[in-house]
Amino acid sequence: MLDLVAPVQGRVAFYDLSRKQESFADAVVRGLSCKPKRIPSHFLYDAQGSALFDRICDLPEYYPTRTEMKILADHAAEITRHIGPEATLIELGSGSSVKVRLLLDAMTAPSAYVPIDVSGEHLLAAAEALAADYPRLAVAAICADYSDTFPLPETPGRGRQVAFFPGSTIGNLEPADAEPFLAGWARSGVDMVVGVDLVKSRDILEPAYDDAQGVTAAFSLNLLARANRELGADFDLSAFAHRSRWNEARSRIEIGIQSLKAQTVRVAGRSVHFAAGERIETERSYKYPVASFQAMARRAGYRPEAVWVDPNQLFSVHYLKAGPV
Ligand code: AVJ
Image (cartoon, rainbow, N blue to C red; front, side, top):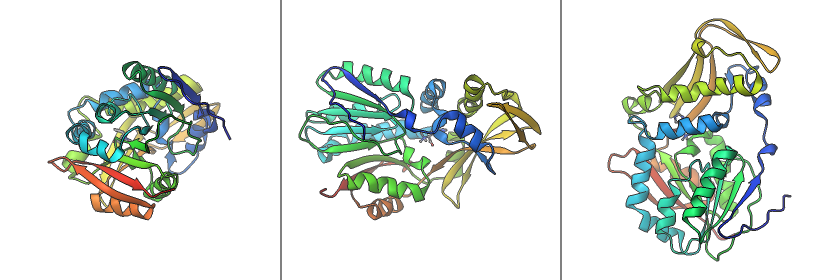
């Protein structure tokens, strides 16, 4: 058990728990020997990948970020009434810590903010910027995969502990994993404010994951560039392409990298063969209708207290209430 000391006001406490995770090298070697080939999506978020993801969020085709921001801004008073005074917000996959400000600004005397992200440098920079803007808040950053189990630092304040899980990042989990993931937080007595992308037409979904400027493609292919940088791999980025499609039957966007020809690549001292057209699966992004997400939350032990949806029914934000511990 890791002993986490309490954060001090005005200073960011930083806990690096990332060494518990499988290394990029191991994940790539293992994933490229699977059939089909696959690499877990959280490895997309190195410093370059996190910066590209921030650009995705500003794309005209990528509706989730701006739609969720608008929902949070429009309903901040009501959402923060559910959160209550003196609360601790635990943000899962905190990235640049932009959205959380909409909640913090509307909360009554927030006590602490605990951002959790796999991208260590990005996390620390974002946490420090936020701590500077909110000097009364205790900030404790944890470098970890949000889906792992880890101890939470002790935080000041007598309010609730509330997990903030925006961006439909929960859609990256397989539904069979999302339910036990929610159940773990529910059992700990932690409420949740979670953003969930809604099912909609292919004409809106597919361009959101394959934009005209090619930023999403660059984000995908950065995974191979990262392997070249960190593992001494020799991927020729022009011989691979970003692919995404909406799988309506499974209610998910499937993202991958396709080999444009038969080729052999050196990765971490090994040779990996690609057939022409073969794919590496990199991401799945599940979309949930309101009722089916609420049903899953109930099975996980949460009470869905409220849900907010934008007028175009693109995106949802749920308030899930945990029972008493
Ligand atoms: C951060 C996982 C929610 O699935 O919409 C966006 C990631 N990948 N474009 C999503 C992503 C390509 C994003 N999540």
